[in-house]
Image (tube, rainbow, N blue to C red; front, side, top):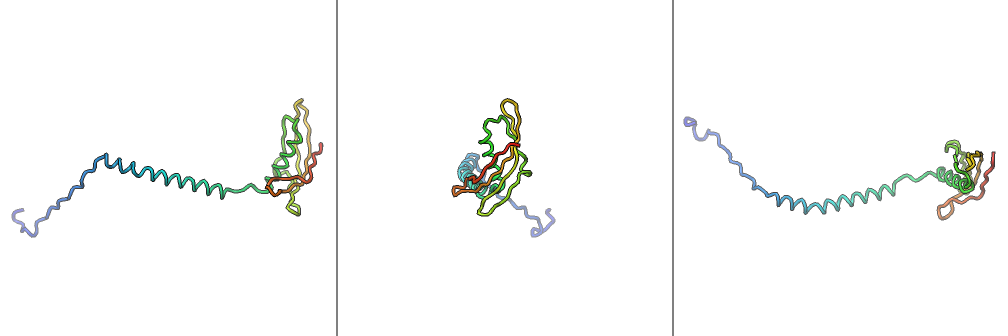
Length: 143
């Protein structure tokens, strides 16, 4: 390299070394951010739960009316050991004027003595001001 002129010689660059940080300092910095991260995550979880509660699908009126009619049948047939309703797609549901609904279906029961019986139920119901189902007519007929 002695025969190369000075202005053509490669210049070696010297990098400056970064100061070495101690582990203790890094740990303190992480622990200082931990409460903030926890608070942010809890806030996001709370917002997510509130959004789910507000936007989740509400049960359809048809399902609610059928379940209310079946609950009334269960209260009338308290002595039965087993109660089996027809499938929901076989239950007849009809909307009447004045926000009333007509529901009809069948049910099979087995008593405590082992005797089975079949019934048809028909009812007319509506939702009252409290949001509960109220019946204007209910019939439970043996088949």
